[in-house]
Length: 185
Image 1 (cartoon, rainbow, N blue to C red):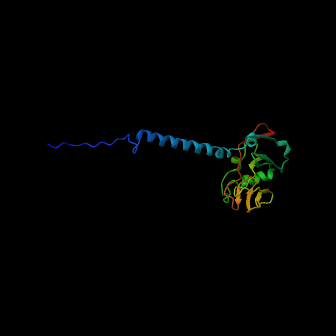
Image 2 (cartoon, rainbow, N blue to C red; image 1 turned 90 degrees about the vertical axis):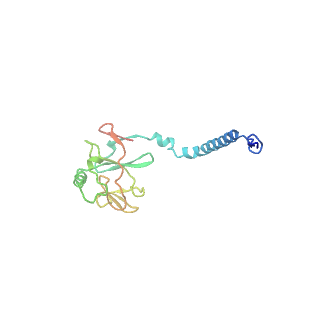
Image 3 (tube, helix red, strand yellow; image 1 turned 135 degrees about the vertical axis):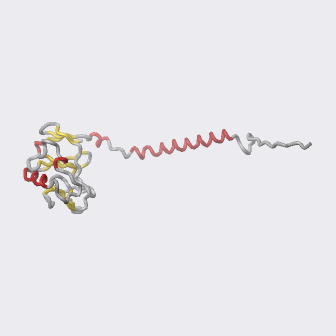
């Protein structure tokens, strides 16, 4: 009768090593590499957070008595210019009449861009929505702002009417703290 021979492999031999130990070493090395990567990447990611002085200006208050009818004041908020404009009755009539104009690229009524009871004041970020230039008031075709960089025209409600800018001037979050003070942010 023939004897059957069974061959077994010694998993504890120096050539093969212990598979449980080898797996642990691979997992530990991978975890150490991930930890080192996080430690290197964290300062690079953290430096993209806003600076402390910018966060301190998260909201500002402005005294509206400094703006006369027909004038605008430029204030700095979070490193951006903000236009606070006290519009004349003629400007208000014109922008309300243009609420349904067909050439509005981003249709918005003037009432959607101002606060009820304070329609004479317009608060917008003074940065062109095309490439971020600062538009000037009174030079445009629609009685509002004109961006000299690429020729965008905004009306007195900050709505884009002509030119390459795709959007209206941005209306930041703001509220009236009183009849003479506005809080932006």
